[in-house]
Length: 333
Ligand SMILES: [Zn+2]
Image (tube, rainbow, N blue to C red; front, side, top):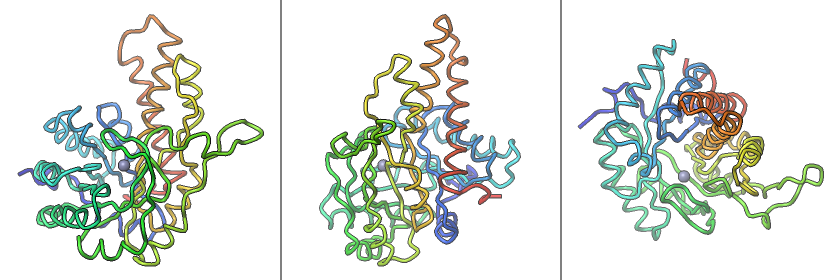
């Protein structure tokens, strides 16, 4: 048993309570390699923002579970070396799909886990989520559950259609399971193709796709039933068009990639949404930077010469999200 506290990590309890009442959201950035981790920690330390290091099942397999534990511990020490005296860093499992996986993460230093039973019949989702909560809470590990189904693809999680969260179900779900936070479906989705061109309109000036708005009425409905309860948004990358352009201009092929406008996320962060998941945007930043180097310097074969610029670009992106979208800067002095 590896206690997350011994790694210097914290759970989400206190940071979510502060975020809900303070009208901002905590960034949950997915990572699976050293450069991403360095960029996340540098951005969080420089802005003094609480941060959630988010790992999917696929990322955990990719990075190796043992290495990952020490990377998280290293992240805390790295943050301190950057002058961040009391780092608030969470190691969180994204989309846990079984009790066994969640238990394994709790037993190996994670301070927070998500159990995603959203694809199950309601009663089965309740039973599975409660089982994970009962186990995790014994060790002070916080748990995120999910109600409603998101469209899109994220690692091994996929669904073709949205089913918005039913506000009528949330009180029963939260009360019976004991979850600490709840992911809901209001129209965000996983991946870099969040909407088809048919679902969008086009900006007559730029010719770019304009996505349909999020279902804020569903979020308001949930808030009315559960005032002040921490709400989570998955699939909340904005798919910056400048990265898509750089990728496409340098040999890539991402036609019609589109995400959630940052103004909508800013609005959600001011409400009871206290955790916003961002994965695709950092993939795009990394890919754009690497493609640019490959195109401009075809003779380059030192990985530091392309992973270095990729790391710089991700750091810039993370800082922008923290300061201009989520508003979590200065909340972990
Ligand atoms: Zn997700």
